[in-house]
Length: 213
Image 1 (spheres, rainbow, N blue to C red):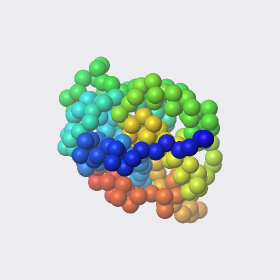
Image 2: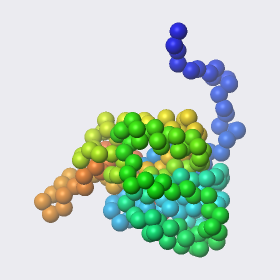
Image 3: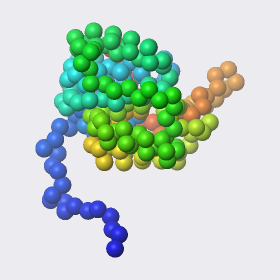
Image 4: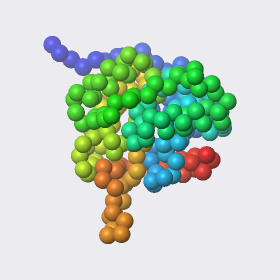
């Protein structure tokens, strides 16, 4: 008989046995979430800063302690690899971290479409091989092929990422821009996250954290 895996409640890991925060006050340990904000509000810079600090143990934004440092896996889909290196080097310099020994692995594939079974499997295989503490995917718009997202599509993608988190105990951070009602002068960005799918607290966090950069 094929049944679902179960565990007695009293045998579940207790909260006291593990750190509540990956980055104190910013990102929970093994959280799967969206780092969202308006275009050009430094989302990518903040994600890279978190990547450097989780990988090195340095305080994020020189202020927020990292409780569980470990390796980071990064997919920077919109920027060239040269620009990504330059930004990471700059953050390392500001944080007093050695760049050459930084435990950040960058996915260099030209595309990663998580609405396809093949790319889901490729990402799962990579996470399994590297066992990163944090997976950063930037931005959501480059993670699927559809021209306009719906709540069900976002839910399906986040469900897959939650499966990765549970299987490999890694935190997952996805950068995106909230969708807004289009106007003739300011059309909505395709493939953005519907506004009612964004957590208000996360958006507030981005605005506050970006101001500190």
